[in-house]
Amino acid sequence: EVQLVESGGGLVQGGGSLRLSCAATGFSFSDDYAIGWFRQAPGKEPEGLACISSRDSTTYYPSSVKGRFTISSDNAKNTVYLQIDSLNPEDSARYHCAAEFTSCGLVPVWKYDYWGQGTRVTVSS
Image 1 (cartoon, helix red, strand yellow):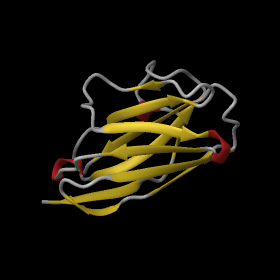
Image 2 (cartoon, rainbow, N blue to C red):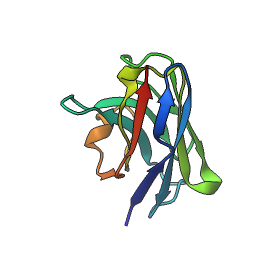
Image 3 (cartoon, rainbow, N blue to C red):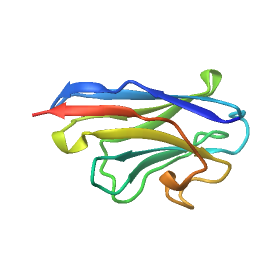
Image 4 (cartoon, rainbow, N blue to C red):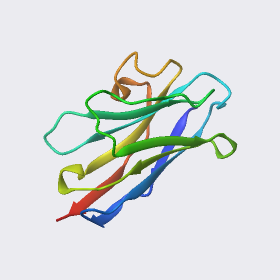
């Protein structure tokens, strides 16, 4: 069974940075899974942020995402990270990682089969 557990959220001051983690179990990173991050704020649509291939670490970012998000992975730890820089209050949301046996960029990350519970990020002004 695929399970994803996010961590690293919290309260951060505007201008700061965070690194979110997504620990994955139930599949091998040598398989061709797409693992991505998306966020959702209350009352808003989900927003895809980044995706990485578990097999070769190729990254994908939606064109709507500016360069403040960086996705990476540590295959030895079966963990994917999302670095967020220059945080502002509009970044406050619940951040989820998601996974599917597919390639990045084919479908929105929030439509992947497997989600974690998410980690909440709150940015103060």
